[in-house]
Length: 129
Image (cartoon, helix red, strand yellow):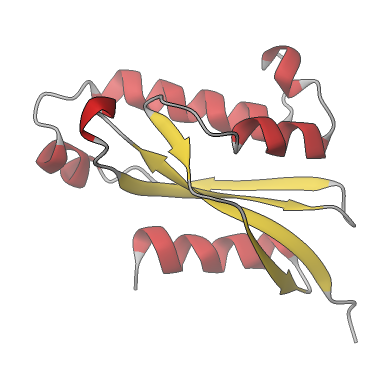
């Protein structure tokens, strides 16, 4: 039987007009200490974005989400934050901020496979089936 792993996750939110504090959920970022890994899944529903913020620059917003994803994965070229260890990247990404891309509070969970867990969370909080 696979080992049960503790993970932490936050829902990634898109806040196109920060002053209004209205948002749509666009992804999930998950950290598993035992695996020393950060998993991220993002899904931008352009129709929902434009319903919330007509005239939003979808290309620019997608570039912000792409940068978030590159940092989470620690990819080359993702800057000094991307060079941090998994815990450091997760903590930086989930820090409270007033920007277009924000996250919910961090929540705990248990799983046997962080990759499956992040997919389940994406479906539950973002794509909703």
